[in-house]
Length: 206
Image 1 (tube, rainbow, N blue to C red):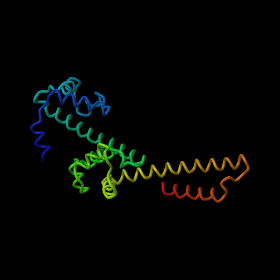
Image 2: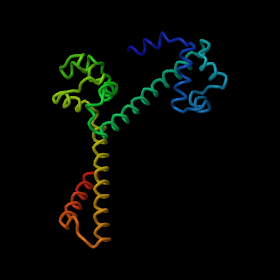
Image 3: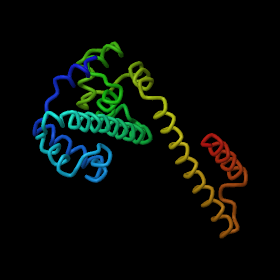
Image 4: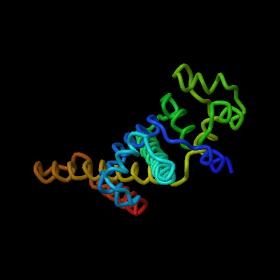
C-alpha cells in the first residue's frame, strides 16, 4: 500500500537519475542491456540518466528506477549474507562488532528492535556494535537463532570441509613420514583413528 502511494507521487529528477547510473554500475549492467530490457532508445536512456523525461516517459523512468532499486536491495542482501557466512566460518563471531550490525541489516532490525527481542537495553546493543562489550550466553543463543538457517547450515558445511581437509593433510604427513623413515612415530592406532575421523567428517560434509 505504501509503495503505491509513494510511486503515485513519484517525480523524476537529477538525483534519481544519478541513483540509476550508480545502480547500473554496481550491478554491471550495460546500456545495451537496459535499452533492450526496458525498450528504450539511446536518447531515452540518456534522459533517464539525467532525470529529464517528459510526462509521456515518466512511466518508463519510474519502472527503471524501481526495478533497479529492487535489484540493488537483493544485491545488498546477498552481499550481507555472504559476509555473515564468512564471519561464522571464521568463528568467535560474538566478539566481532560487525557481526551485530550485519545481523540487524540482514533481518531488518533497528537497535531497538534487537534489544526488545533479546530483552536487553538499547545501550547494550550499541555497546556490542561499538566493540565495548559482547553479548552474554543467553543473548548469544538468541542471536544465533536469528541468523537465517540456510546461512548457518552453509557455514557449518564449509567448516566441516576445512576440518576434513586439515585432517587429510595431517594423515598424509603421517603416512609420508612412516614411508620415508620406516618408523612408526604415531603408531598404527593413531593413523586408524585419524582415518575413521576423516571418514565421519567426509560423510557429514556430504
